Amino acid sequence: MSDHLRQQILAGFETVLTGLTTTATRCYLSRVRLLPRDHDNALLLRAGPESIETLSLYRPSPQLRRFRVEIAIVVRATDALDAAINVILAEVEVALAAAGVLTTIPAQSLAVAEVGAPQQVQGEQQAALAVVGVDVTYTATEGDPTGATP
Image 1 (cartoon, rainbow, N blue to C red):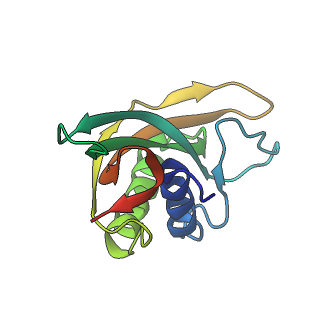
Image 2: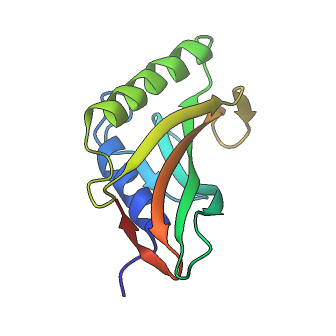
Image 3: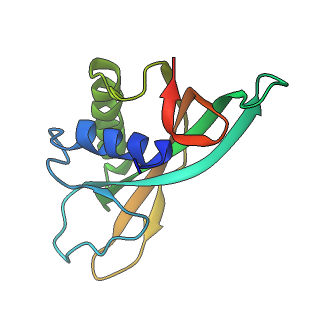
């Protein structure tokens, strides 16, 4: 069986966002990630909420799905915290707009939904993170969570 569409979407984001100038290969598909003491900037991808709207009374019904991918931008705590987060956010937005992000999902749209305020994270090294919500809208057929429809 193929992966759930949510997993396919997350994997697509990981592929596109790995290799950005500021975060390099430090893009992780993980809710929790131990970063080394001397870590550099990184991205953590995780599944957010999903809403499903049934589009027909007939079964199996086409569904309009809205799935939020949450991207946690993790940076070392510095005086220029907002500037560092904004540089990474710009790279993320450019990468998502330029690439065929979700080549396995035919009809989808992406929208950067919100950027959370930076939060200080205490640990062996001070860091800060801001969470960006990216909404992915796509269609699927009821009972088939592994295949998208045009």
